[in-house]
Image (spheres, rainbow, N blue to C red):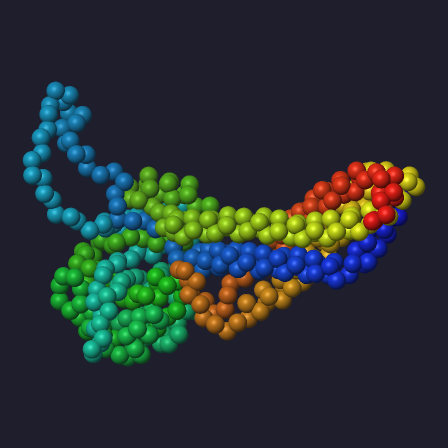
Length: 422
């Protein structure tokens, strides 16, 4: 019987080919747009996470102490004592990690060395870079280049120059591509670095790098010693320590443990980029809402063709009921029609989506997608999203057939056959 119902449903659809093809085309276009949109948003998120994990530190030991000096220094000494502070004006000290070499030795302990793959102390400061008539405020970062390479892979990201030149040249700079473009810098150019306090220094461009992370590409690197001099820090002090760990996607517990051991705040890359990740989450909710909305619109298209079929085939339906077809069998027949239209449109849309995704991914256009810069659009080819959108489309199209099928099941054969207008 199911085979007979399927054959009749197919004949109904083929009998109205133009309307059927139009409905299938509408479902296909909506499916293609949804899959492509979802691929773009998920691809951007995946690309961002991959770039951050490969370039940025997984955990950063900040110069913020977790156990600050208590405000009431008499607390705990005598409960009857009282402390008053009047006009307490203190010099705001910059955040710094003191005796950083001792902290580095902690990461070499057996309980941590298998989790902490690399550690790189750094010093950051805001400076003014001047070349001729051009000047720009930027972030200067002092690093130990070998340790920095273990974190960001800077050696493989050089567009011009070599790390060896940076190591041999006094007052050498590694310049991010964004800075190089803005200031028209080339290899061996002289740049004057003017710190917030202290004397200016003439430095030489020893290399230009590109990581894809906009914040990093808008900065310059110098040796750790030079960074400490420019930042006004002693030799045993740094701004922070960047860490690369074995589980970058599950690093919260390790960060909290390191906070207790070092006494300094340890921030994960997820905490550093919380606002961006939150934005991606909101975009994801919007995309899924769009999936539901467009799916409902596609369902209306399917329901429309079935309503028309019920109206035009009322006499045929009445005859089928007279021949013994039950209401459930008639409902099943129209549900078959909705399922076939939805499945055909969704599959065609899936094929079109593969083409549109490949088209966007192959476009030779450099796009600054939020915090990262890449050539071409970052597209996700995860089959889960294909099956999800196609599945939702087919389900909605099938459910949309219930109302017309229920109307067909309620037709009275005698009344229909008596009505000469049908």
